[in-house]
Amino acid sequence: MPNHTFSRFAYFDTNIISHLAKNKHLWPKLFEFLTQNDLTLGISGAQISELSDAKNLHQILAEMFVMVPSATLKNWDVILDEEVNAHPKKRTEPLLNYPLNAILFEEDGIQKLQDFLSSKKLGEARKDQLHHAQQFAKRHTELKSNFPQSKTGKYSREQADEFAWIMVMQWLASTTHHNFLASFQNDIGNFHPEVFLSIRLYAHVIFYKYYLGQREPKKNLGFW
View 1 (cartoon, rainbow, N blue to C red):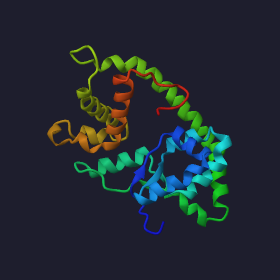
View 2: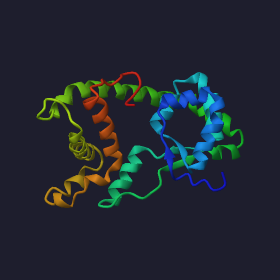
View 3: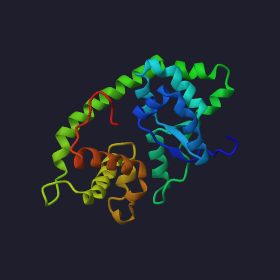
View 4: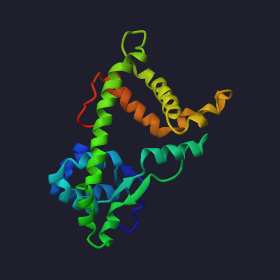
């Protein structure tokens, strides 16, 4: 992968990642697809936590992550910091945190990755993730009615942007960026919620999945 930039990412559901790991015959095709399109398999911190449960797959996951272009991505709080700093423009920093293929050049690199997936620290992070998933399910039930349906009596696609706008405001207000948001109290015209792509993406997933789709959050899998 001499010309691979690790700057463009393919995002797969955790279940798809597990399926790929279980079927090694798919790896050559996956490698070909990623390299031909200069794509990298992007792994988020939330996915790593979820994969800690699949203890029987840790060895094969570690092998797959170094055999195809793979990388861990920056945590959401880091990305949000970058979006705040870039406002009113969109952030331009890379999403890359660490290219997992570099582990091949470390002594016992694959074993270290496997040990990390099975580590007590990651196991504790998974417990915390599951706890937040339970809280999310509860809060979703409590707060869903706060965002009213359209005049038709149902949620509509046209409401997605409004929902995302509200989510941006709430998210910034409830984090360490409260003062940033408050600075626009008398200057709201210069606040640009559209640049907060990380929150807007999350908001659209929530809206399409749980409002339009009428699904209920699962308490045992996390948000995704």
